[in-house]
Image (cartoon, rainbow, N blue to C red; front, top):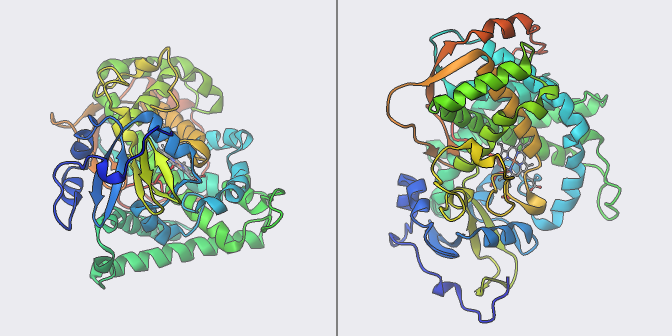
Length: 483
Ligand code: HEM
């Protein structure tokens, strides 16, 4: 990305509507998506003031990929990651470049395709159990239900479902408090963030309790290191033979950071994706009819599982298209680690860059009729590496991408196997934009399908080792990770 002539960041156009002190905080808090969409016309980048920080928002897909891939120069950092680091320390998603490769090597075995097969069986069972607990005519709080589903699946795949229900309930409530605070804290100047307000106290308490809960889980697993075939066992067992100068295993505090990272990242982003997929299905009856046909043919009355994945083509395209329109990680930040240049603009150490899959995914020059939900646009094309980035790119690309896609496809299938979905009311549902594109408050009505009886008849009882309580709230999601 070297241009022949270089210029300074001051020459990059400033987005309209900046106020003294507040910068673009007002449009970003009031209607962030409209603000981001209004910037799609800038060809390469535009200056945005995020509270106290001035940042360069990248509008071009090739430049976006360049920043993602060059993670030594454009490292995790900036307002979003600084806030997330307060909670999950230097876990895989937040750690700086010098710590990253070792952590990634240690975490990668947890997501090995061999393990994914086992996780997929859990996803199928958990999804069928959730979908089977609803009744005809019910108006569903979709995000809450999807949180329950992904929590159940995450608990089983991560901790073999071995948490007492009360511990889980508290962890979810604390997660909700913490992630709800991220976006506002990101926009607030440091001095105000430190004020001992009741909200700040609640945030600090929830953060400390959440960490203590995870630390206890890790300590218990250290004491019983048998392979439970779950994510935590893989983390405990991981050895990095390439780490000659560092510890070859994860320390206790690193294990806690990683477990918390997966716990937060594994639930909300996937739940939100699923909620949006169900909303788009409900509002596009022809797609829903085809999904029903696919489900009936492929499952033929069986419980969804890994063996069905290769034939769930439409469900996979629905998930792909959902992540294009509503990428949960709609915005991410990077910090520049030294003198650098981006498309002819000289950058200095500490400069902040903003990347937005939401903006890239809705550019009309990249996607025909970009606001239209059209799963068939993926019939003959695979997602392009630069213009489709719901999971980021490069060495920091989401480690849980296949895990999340597998879960989302199987859960969508489990729901459509049993239910027909219809919207409640005529108004389109709008995302609640916080650290992620939340679907909080989305409601859909259920009508029982004929095929339900077949599915229900053949579904074995759900083998959860622990009853999982309903998700507490469905607050703003965050893949802690995803930012
Ligand atoms: C649909 C669901 C998900 C979405 C949209 C998503 C999105 C993302 C994105 C965009 C990134 C890159 C962030 C950046 O470059 O700044 C990321 C990283 C990450 N994600 Fe996800 N994610 C999802 C599910 C998951 C799941 C299920 C897990 C774990 C169980 C997970 C764990 C992680 C981790 C650990 C990273 C950091 C990777 C690294 O830096 O090496 N994510 N995710």
